[in-house]
Image 1 (cartoon, rainbow, N blue to C red):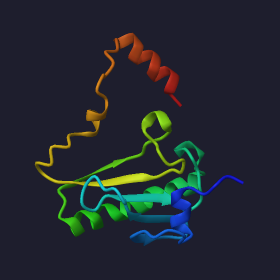
Image 2: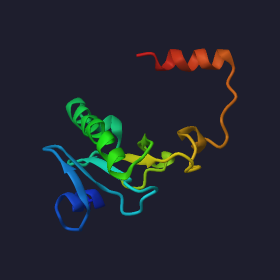
Image 3: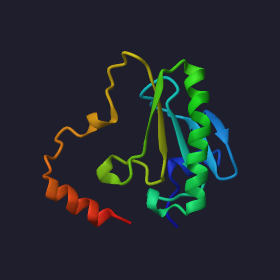
Image 4: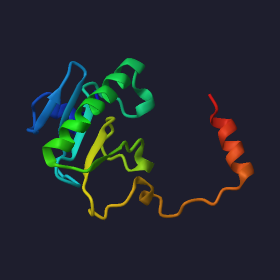
Length: 139
């Protein structure tokens, strides 16, 4: 049996966390190493490593929790907005192999930049390359 992730240990109350919201299927708690005041993680209670591994109903529950908490967190810390993101896979920066949504309150003048700032070397794609990618993705 694989060892538990830190999120499973939080769920099972084996390690402490500042839990701010819980549903039957999701758990939300303050990030132990916050990027901003109110930085919250929302996780499914059951361990799924990648977003695409989540069953559709659990994905809906996860994003419903994010939807519900966004204005609550913004009000609690007087934020001007929120950056919401998922590091899906090790190459994307995922450190814990358990899906988790980062909810990072943002403040005017915080100089953190938009989510586009993570791509330091953006590709210069031709129209043909964009068409090829769009066709490959088209579901």
